[in-house]
Image (cartoon, rainbow, N blue to C red; front, side, top):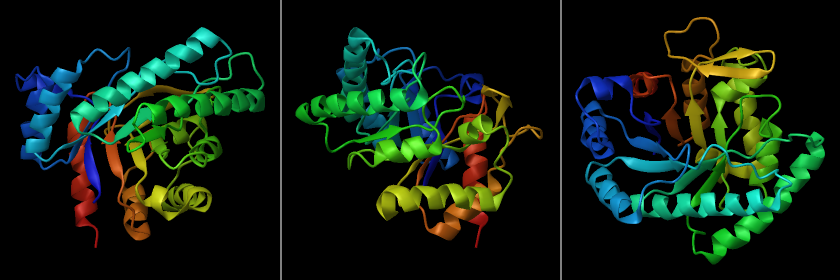
Amino acid sequence: MIKFGPSGTCSQFAANGFTATVQAAPWLKSLGLDCFEYSFGRGVRVGAETAEKIGAVFAENGIEMSAHAPYFINLATVDEQKAANNHEYILSSLKVLRAFGGKRCVFHPGSPLQLPRREAMDVLLRRLDALMEDVLSAGYGDLWLCPETMGKKAQLGDLAEIVEICKRYDMLIPCIDFGHLNARDTGAIKGYDDYRRIIDTVADGLGDFKTVNMHIHFSKIQYTEKGELRHLTFEDTVFGPDFEPLLRAIKDCGLQPYIACESAGTQTMDALAMKKYYLSLE
């Protein structure tokens, strides 16, 4: 079943007097939304006991939780200590995700830094193999790790690279951030056909299951010639991309993704606008 919800809490949440994550669950239910992405942006600072309490409230309200691993993960690092740290960041994220009762953990693949791009990608894949040994040994093989398409051209994580990464293990499903793809290609997503091209590329590379169940991030994003600059709201009329043709493509392709809206401060209401539009499609 397709799900819509915000990544994190929005400005309206605070304006309504809410402060705690657990308060988001009944609020999202009252709006008619279905999911919520919890970000560990600067580190995993939620204990398992607290996470279980949060997860129980979200489960009671029928809101599925996902998690975003710390932003600074870089599987292309050549530094052995940083590589070991990456394992801890992912394992800690999965531990809390399980306590939340969620199934999906998004992570950033990495950056080439001083390495040539293909060489950096080969490093990333070797690091991924070592990481997956630890993930599976720790008993997290029933969860989904979702490598994300990235918004800056210098970052690993274009569409082809995410498909290549996700081919490697069954528990890897793609997080397709359409705002990121549009930003890194300086406005390449113009409409329905471009969304279909992206979906078809995922399907050709990864098959039906991973395509139907893909994780999606969506927002409008301002960009420069180097790619992503900052997230915007749906009020933007300059940078895009537009969500309506994406949802038509999702409907036509019979996809059932988890869609987390990442608009800047309006993510909850923008997620609701997406769901209402999707439900209006015949």
